Length: 56
Image 1: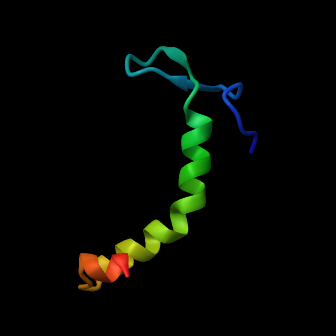
Image 2: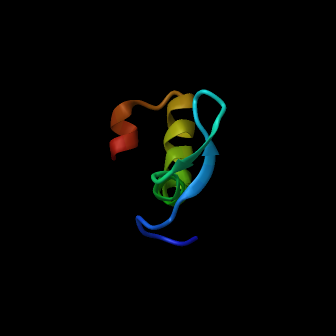
């Protein structure tokens, strides 16, 4: 995926009209990078773990 502020994604605005989202590429990159960690945290909490278990 390309990086940088010059990357613009086509998207729909809240009104349903076509728009341009300058932040989408950054969000996509960040959450793709952190998906595995978020999944592990969710599984820990779902299995009865505490917040301290997630932090450690």
